[in-house]
Structures are given as structure tokens and as C-alpha cells.
Length: 259
Image (tube, rainbow, N blue to C red):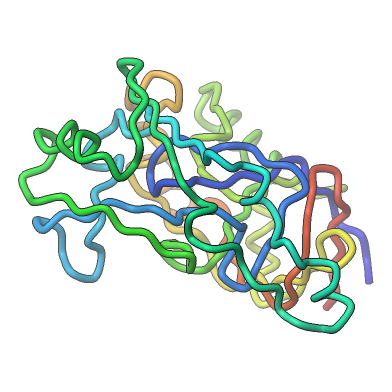
């Protein structure tokens, strides 16, 4: 087992495509970071295999801030330590624990289930919009995404742009001990341990889309980033991973290569 880096920050996105939040000391289940992408908005105008209304259709979605009312209860299951001692999967809180408020770009604060929230979005979509809630995590592919500071630095050097890591909307941002950008590409099909307990397997490269062109603070777009990644890196930046052993993680946790 070789140490290869450390976890610098952990992020989750309570509503798919909206602004994310940095979390500390959080549980990671087989389905992903607890509280990550539990809400999503679908559009009847979108294809059935990807029915979501996202920041690709509405860039200012990244300016909407979602906050759990009972934040502490959304970070770890209540019986976590007892479950770990018995080698059990800890039960999640009831759905009410994940009650959510939305702060809109114009300063309104709305309950996510308030009809006024969806009504405020309807002029942004040609289809009918519906709110979805799931404790499974409405991720596009694998339950975890990982992106390194080395890859960010390489992309900045290659493009001459100053890039905010939040454009890449990862769950785990990592700092490799001694590696260049895109080192995570070499980890596909390899097992990693993060912190004391979590084990993951990197499964595939992360194909990038319009989302990374959107500035997380202004919603302005910079298409050159996506064109560059498509031309120089076959459209990939970062990786997806599956969870093999559930556990908690926090910023500063060591990352070990298991095989």
C-alpha cells in the first residue's frame, strides 16, 4: 500500500447542476457522498435517458444556492459507529432530514417544494418541469468524481486561463504527492483507500460537457476550455469512481494506492 496523495476538499451538490457546498467529515455510501444530488429537476422536453434540466440549458443554475435546513443530520447517519462495529451498512435518516431551501440569484429564499420555485424556472425550459427527490443520489454515471490540482494547473498552463476548480464539479479534489496533471487517468481500474476506511475503485475517465465552461460566480461561459480539452485530451478531465467500502472522509485524509 503506497501513499499517493491527499484529499484537499470534499464537495456535494444538493440539487443537480446548482452550486455545490464544501463539507467536512462526511459519510460516503455506495451511492456517493451523503446528501449529494438528492434533488434534481426534470424536463419533459429532455430525452428519457437524461431527463434533467441542467446548467447546460440554464447557465445561471450555478448561481442558485441550495442549503439543507438540518445540515448536521445530512453529513453522517445517526448509527454510523455502531453499524461499522457490526460490519453493517448504516441506515440513512428519514427523508424529512433532507429538507432543502433554495436561495435564488435575485435573493429570494424558497422551499425547494414551494410551487413558486419551479414556477420561477419555467420560462427557462420549453418542457414541463418536475422536482425529483431520491436518497440514491442522481449522479450521471458513477457515484464519485475526482479531480486533481495538478490537472487544474496543467489546464491553466495550456490555456493561459485562470480556472476555478469549482468549474469541474468534483466530489473529491486531490493533491498528488509526485505526479503531473492527468495522473488520475492512470488509476482507472485501480483501488484506492481514502482516510481510515473508505475504499474506491477508479472506473473511467470523466467526459466533459458545457458545464465546465460556466463561471461558478458569474455564470458567464468560456467555450475555449471545453474546446481545448476536446482537442488535447480527447474530451476527458478527471475520473469517476465506484465505492467498494463505505466510510467517512475529511479534508487532509491520505490517499493510498491498494493495487
